[in-house]
Image (cartoon, rainbow, N blue to C red; front, side, top):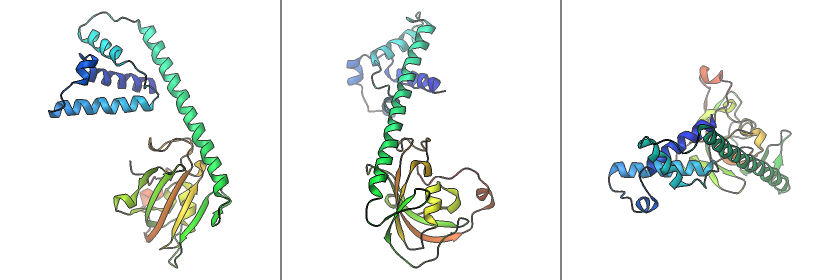
Length: 249
């Protein structure tokens, strides 16, 4: 499937570059809606390909391929040669992704070891670390409750990947319907309190990545303010086996 997506990305990028040499591309007009949209498509595809480890693709070769196809010329490489080349690129992208995932796992583990030594940081039996930022005497939610929270999520390097605070709008969700680190952490809190959760990857998204901003195996840091307990979840959401995500994509 990834090979097909790679081929599709290259194809779309080729359409953007079709009929253009480097000088023409550098001087292309970006005035009409169609021109601006074309640039946007190329920019998006280029970023996606770069994230997949394809940042050394030859744009002139891409343009040559689409020009040959449009001119109905014989292709310059056999299907076998093309599949071999795509396979090489895909393997390299997977190696790069694996290295990034391994780096994220190590960075998270190292962070948690040092973080656990700080005053005020407590570690539960599951491995969740938390810190009380502001105390209050409100009600304490149960796993069956729906809560309203404000939060900000960062990676261990401090980069923000999501924030209801920045959007200026709190989020409501069932306590039992989110990632395990949140499920456990929210039940420690009382309404009006603010905590920081330091969530190991196995209590977050593990080897999955809910958004490109969060590499697989990432330890996540959330600052969470519990605003209110707003009720019980609807029957359909309570029966779901899939944890919801608070991440706004």
